[in-house]
Length: 76
Figure 1 (cartoon, rainbow, N blue to C red):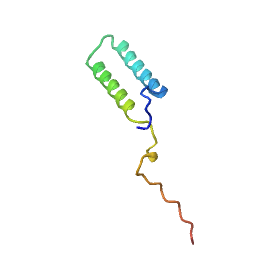
Figure 2: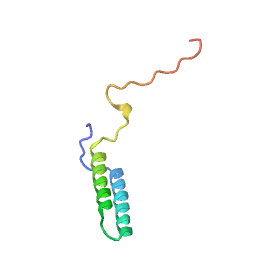
Figure 3: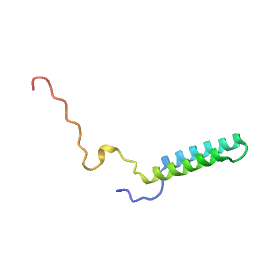
Figure 4: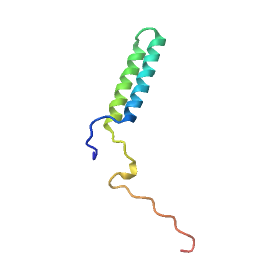
């Protein structure tokens, strides 16, 4: 990873706030904590970790990829 900054980005925080708020609303609607909410919480934590660990880069900027060939003009 070229980015040595360990702090989460604003985009990461925005997605976590949205996911946590959604889980909280589901909890309020359920009235009590249940197995379905536990499964959702585990999913929220796992996606937060994956998104934090995977770099937010365009796949074309990876080493070893090639750019598509330029289109050929007719008669060239």
